[in-house]
Image 1 (cartoon, rainbow, N blue to C red):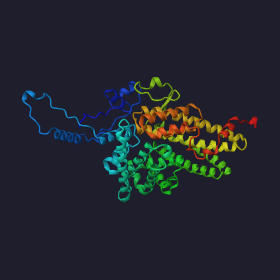
Image 2: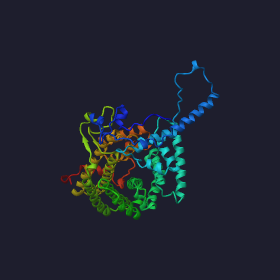
Image 3: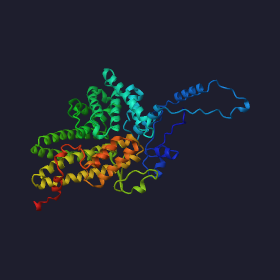
Image 4: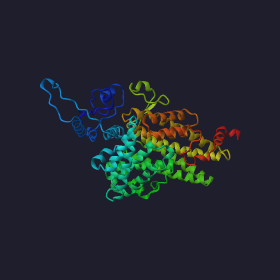
Length: 507
């Protein structure tokens, strides 16, 4: 079914039905209203899933079959214009047209699945197509019947992926790895945080194993390099939060491939590899903290505090190595800058503007890593303060608390950009949920940040139907939620109270 020429204008011009001059870096209309331009859509990508002609042909066939033999009208009865035949959009079309703007994004605002068009064009395997349909169908929460169809497509994609993995020719293909990532994303969307030890964990482990099997060849194409990056970050962060025990955090093969991938980067993307290395170091420390807690090894905890403080200094130093492409602007007067047709949530009267959602996502990976690291440092220092007062550890507790508060505020201030960046839907909002949860989980009880993050996660869950967001908000409301912080349960509430009341004069 032909719907007319595809508009290649930016999101603002399309929404307001204005002529877009498509200038770079910003069109004239966006400059006029002081709005960040979302970038321009690729018409070839947008047409990629166009099945209109096929749908119209089938609809006409059904229409002729339903009417029976046609009857020729007399001249005076003939209508002045030919009859219009309306064809329904198929569920497959709905799914794929949802995936394009909400997950793939634009040239300027690349989405979570920016690699998908290339895979669908060059290697549209049954596993990849079914998995992509499942993700797209999940997005249409206003049509309940599509949820069951999404589950069916997920099952089809799972079976097709298992078949591909059993075939040596397809097991290590980009398409198979892409399907595994999509199946894992499906589990993340539909599962609560406390129920992620099943399907999602298996997909995460499987994707990590595929990186090892795919070898150096995977780094020679933009799609392969992007898949390599996504899987590594997913596993490095997940090992900290969920203790998956994935081999990727200390795999010699992945370490060697990561060194090679550094040579594939330019000056703007090289910090991605540096941050990944710091995340791996963080993952290793998290494992040691859990082990020290399990064996109640205070001496080892003391060494881990020093080790963690050095890592935190390295993380802070990472921010000074970034090129201008990583910079962001802090807006302190939102009403005068925000477009009138958008109402993003504002935390403390300010928000950030970034160059892309990918950039803000890397920043929030950095922020949530420092939050978890400093929460571990604070917990271990509090354990020592629970035994005896020490000005050194009192200072460490206070410093960690300040860093956690600063990183949590920055995460909250980054949230509006996800809503006004031009990349909306699951592909953008999904990437801010875990940073929001970590900010809320580690914020002080009763603090504005904890209340605000809980409210925003509720909004995301109600808006998108992502069950993980709903579960996160419920966990934050619990008085003593199950912790995702390594060694967190080694500190009791009384220790926090004692640390807060201690001073050198009172000791």
